[in-house]
Figure 1: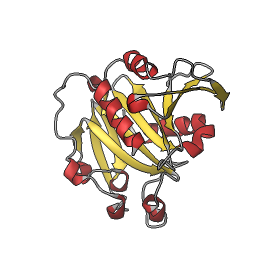
Figure 2: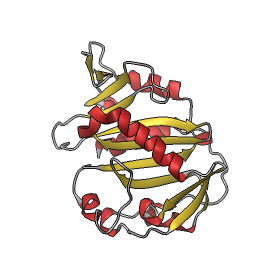
Figure 3: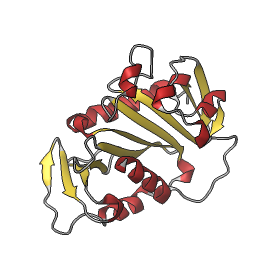
Figure 4: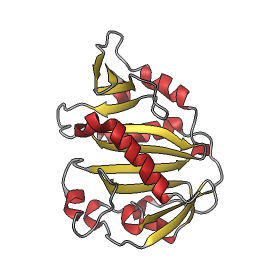
Length: 222
């Protein structure tokens, strides 16, 4: 729940002024909860800021997008490591509580997003002044406190990364037994992406990111 709240906060803070985009995106009343996930492999052709993307109906989190056409956002369900959609053989994994192997990959028209540097400055304002930094998995982690980032870790790659400046992960405290990690980046000048997955996979953060990029490339026509 905390990851979802921070994700929504991030989207609000990153979102720029409203930009007219042809066609509809989705209706939240059409959100498909896991208990109703389809396993329909029918391809759906979507257009996001001039880029053509094709996903199966099973991949899409909103039934309203099954009609295809222009959209401003796309929300995708998948499983690590190969970003497979819900199928008759793996559906139970999507129904289990917690993240497990589930990964959410969300696409947004990049014209609606603000500068990442400004967002990074806002996030880093929550780092505790005397935060102990820890290096592991090729990352430097910082503790946070206060506001929406209370009880989170901020991670920065030790070596410059072509996409990732930083990302955040929840901590196993209280009722949060399955914290997630959220990564935001610009796939290209037209598409902004954020994805989230279980913190248990943090040691594989590079492989997961590379897999997300391959997944997008496989489903993007231009």
